[in-house]
Image 1 (tube, one colour):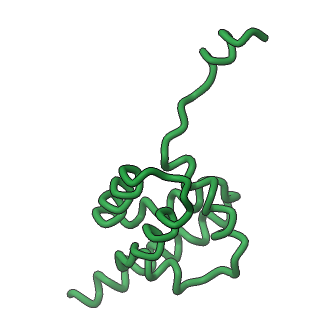
Image 2 (image 1 turned 30 degrees about the vertical axis):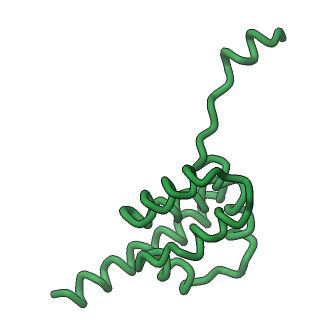
Length: 109
């Protein structure tokens, strides 16, 4: 296959793809943690922002964009971390996320 054919079939990777690749496997390899999902759900994103900043793999602009996006929608972190997860793992974390949303709804009712 020629280089021209390869480049026409390639998809551009986004910073989110790289973040998923770098941190997703570590997140999935760690023991399942309700606490880590709860912290993300509560908008505690500083640890994740600091991790990508300290990695040295991302520009300041990418780090700032990720911080802004994650503060606005913390679920984006979970989706990035689960990008390569199997279906059951994905469902398990989604159930935890959804249960946290129900707890929040009841707390504010």
